[in-house]
Image (cartoon, rainbow, N blue to C red; front, side):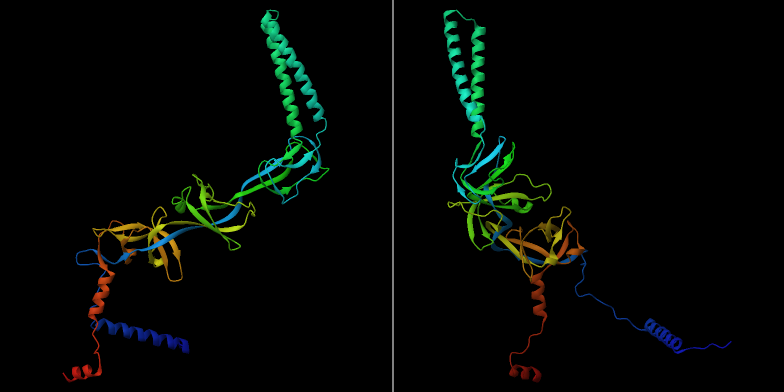
Length: 382
């Protein structure tokens, strides 16, 4: 049987033959011993890691929160009676004073009812007075006296109700502010609880935001702060409220910064950036690659303690740029593992090689170049 080999078969045989020759030659050659000049594990059995003695830099920390402007108070005025709108005294956007008349509803027969209730009350007062006089003379018993008092009380209640209903036909401002919305026009018929107007109070006004779980612990009621508005203005104020319980969905804490506003003019809902300055703290500039998370999700770094044991050092993010990040929470000084942290566990004792010491060793091991040509000539002559 004749075997025909094409070019592909020949090339494969040549490659296989070359590999066999190379492997056979390697088996009989002397292989030099490889020695690691800087072994990971020392003769003592401790793992070697590179450690940097870091010193913090005092910086001014500033808690920044995305926020928006809001009114100090917002009230939606609703109808307490059924009736037709017969007069509107303030339009949308108008400034109003406390107690100022805004809108009127048809009072229908309530003025007459008030007069009727006043007359009835006067009659009942006379009857009650007569009953007391007869009782003092022994001509009326206690039951008659109690009955007269009950009738008098009913008359007072009827008059009070009639006056309330009549007063409800006149809608007045509950506080000084601005008419933000008006939901009715003259001639509209409204029912009980129908919305009529919305009043906003901007004296003072608020900057509202949501503080994160980590930032909320550093914010207290009464702290000074400021806000940068979308139009570029800066306004100063104080923290008047921070929630004691986090929002169940976002895990953030609602926050309010109060801004004094004697003029009372502002727009609710403007975008703002809220700042709460904090005391100066020690910050460290590090590579993001050094950051780790513990079992509880806390951000931190691996360091060593006085016994050269690996410990977790929790940190918080301060700011970041294209070269690295700033963290705080380590105090004024810290020994941080910068190389080999992935090969050691918490509580493990290690052999630290400090970064400054290793740099000094490398520098001293480098040959020193001659300072000038004359020195070079002398060395060559020697």
